[in-house]
Image (cartoon, rainbow, N blue to C red; front, side, top):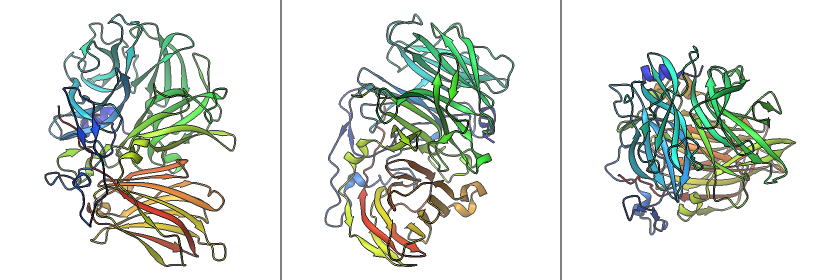
Length: 543
């Protein structure tokens, strides 16, 4: 089952983490809260690895090259970013006392491009108002001063827990989200006598001109409304059975295929998919909303990412989008409570944030379905790719796609079945110099994408949940499948068929040289194209 946050706090640290992004590129900042500048990311020349593609020598063995982590201590849940005065503000749960003490607070980083980040320090401190530490919630910009703290004040609604009781508190910022004050009337929502009552997600209902809050309440989601962000009225409950203790609700509108005449609501939650052969992750429904109650189109939800490590995910809109509601952004915590405290990390603990993705809602056989792809900045900051030749890979044979020389890289391949001797399965094998490996594969026979890390450097010492192979049904398109794979020192993220299916998992191989081989099983694979590109290091600029 999904581990309750009360247990998280007692075991490893309550919630803490960084949600934030990753990517690469060099960064320069020109002022106290400067705008990041990306320098050119030329490919390594003459066999030498350019400095921007190599992690600093003083980094620990597994510190990611371009996935956000704290400098030290513990991180977990990301908090939905907001955009104010040309800057993105992102917060994640952080425990400065890990491993010797519990309790999380909101750590703050800023960006102008969702790729480069500046460390702003702790924004909401724990244990300051007598109501406990700071858990997951959401921040909004109060453009109309509905709460009375001033126009464009940043208002955060968060869960606090003390003595096992979860309550909702309000914190406000009058300096743009850099520091917060605890509201004197906290808690603004007292616990009604239930165990799980947390993770407020607040959105502005434009049609009805009031605030809407979703709360995770055990195995259901509660809907509440407010005019001033302080007084909340219960409206309805949405049951989410067979998904464990649900967390981190999400609620937004999107247009299907970018058509403003086909707009639908999307309700997302972080949940446990064990009953359907999955692990924990982000699951969602599409449907209608009348201002009080959500009506799903189908009873069974869909899943945004089928990997092992995409939890507590948040999505947010793009205020600069030319077509409103056509796309939004997303990122998740790359870890899993089944083994969160067992990962072999040193400087910091708690995993990392995923690559920031761009979401679109597309019609798939009459069903609105979320597609997920790396944001465009990833393309812009990649080094020059090495292109492979098209070739046929015979039954039970392997073809080399080359050897990597950087700590992080991106692999893109297009595969199909040979017409005369069609393959059953194609496997991209990522091999370490010591024999460890991670396999990304596609079964043409079963129409299934999979990621297998049971032979990586740490799998033999990890809990059984770590060694489970993650799969997802994915129909080929005209007999072919395209894979876009982002590899870092502690993760592999797979985006298939333009993001229709995504698998994101923590993995451990020795950073640096990896052998990339494509193996064909049961027949011949038509390798139509392949490319491997180095990815630059993205360091978080210190405050």
